[in-house]
Structures are given as C-alpha cells and as structure tokens.
Image (cartoon, rainbow, N blue to C red):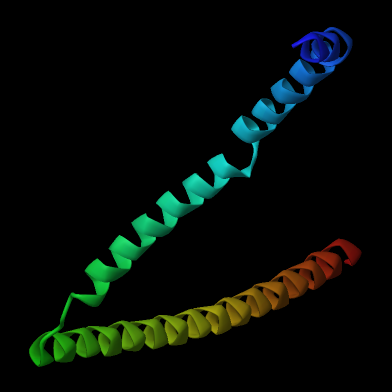
Length: 113
C-alpha cells in the first residue's frame, strides 16, 4: 500500500489529467458522429423501404407517361413561340432602325435647304 501511495503522490495529478483527457476525447469524439450517421442511415432506409413498397398500376403509369408527353409538347411549343417572338422582335427593331435613319436623313435634307 505504501508503494501505491508513493506512486499516487508522485504521479497522481498526471494520471487524473490523462483520465480527464481520455474522457473528454471519448465524449467529443467520433462516437457521437457515428450515432448521428447511424440515425440518418436508418431514416433513409425507412424512406427507401416506403418508396420501394409503393407500386404503380398500369393505368397510373399510362397516365404519368401521357402527362410527361403533354409537358414535353408544351415545352416544345413554348420554345417555338419564343423563337418566333425573338425573330419578330429582331425584325421590328431592324425596321425601327431603318425608319430612324430615314427620319434623320429627311431632317438633314430639310435643314440643308
């Protein structure tokens, strides 16, 4: 018992500090992160199980495909209309520039007379 008391007297503070550091490292270490990750994986697995258990009938699938085709058709129509409007805008802007040049020429001729 005397050896133990001598050891603790000499190295007691060091032993206590090491134990405190180890306790701190364990409580702040990766085990908490691993627990969080495990919970997240469990949630994702539950959602995947729910999704995989969902079945779609043939009629629902046909309806979804029809809806997809309709949306794609609308997108193509909108793109065509946008291109057409852009072309019209360019034409109108070009015509307006021509009119402005002609007006400037007329004003210049009037001023020179």
